[in-house]
Structures are given as C-alpha cells and as structure tokens.
Image (cartoon, rainbow, N blue to C red):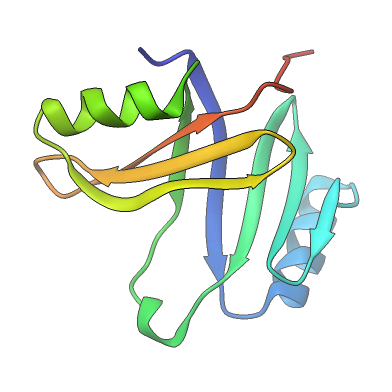
Amino acid sequence: MFLGLRTVIYPVSDVDAGKAWFGKLLGTAPTFDAPFYVGFNVGGYELGLVPRGDDDSEAGPTTYWGVPDVDVALAALIEAGARLHEKVTDVGDGIRVAVVREPSGNVVGVIENPHFALG
C-alpha cells in the first residue's frame, strides 16, 4: 500500500523563526512559503512547517507515506484497526492527505501527490 516516504511536517510555535532556522540549516530557501505552511525540498522529499496551535503544545511531527489513492489507503488503515485523526483533505494542486492513529497511538499520515518524483 505505501509507495515510500514523502513528507515530514513539524509544528512550530513561530513559522518565521522555523523558516529561518531550517533555511540556514539546509542552506536553501523554501519551495513553498505561506503563513499556513512552509515547505523545503530536501533531496526530493518535503520538510514542512505548520503553525502549532495553542492546544498542540505536545504535538510532534507527522510523517506522510505516499499512496496511489488516499481514500483507499485510509479505508485500509481503518479496516486494519487505525482510528481516524484527520479526514481526507485536499491541500491544493491535486494533493490529498489524511491522518490516522495506529493501534499503539502513533500518528500515521498518507499522501496522494500526483506531482511527486524523486530526483
């Protein structure tokens, strides 16, 4: 079902500070830069930053696994015992994501991205 890793998204308390820190660390500017999401291309994979809400003080990163069809993948994850954490969301440009918690409580994201290509 999984095609491979695609994206890791880190919640940050200050998006501008996070963008500056990761930009310096990676030696590159973001490939996507908006108040709600900042994305860096790291070897063909996405490192994303999102604003952390007040109720997300303990939130950690979400890793997204590539899938050919997010609806099919979400149904399979739930059938296997995962609990829905974030419903299927179209984040634009044909990219769709969903997030579950697997039986041990870990967050697992899936992403359908028709534009993804390594290299």
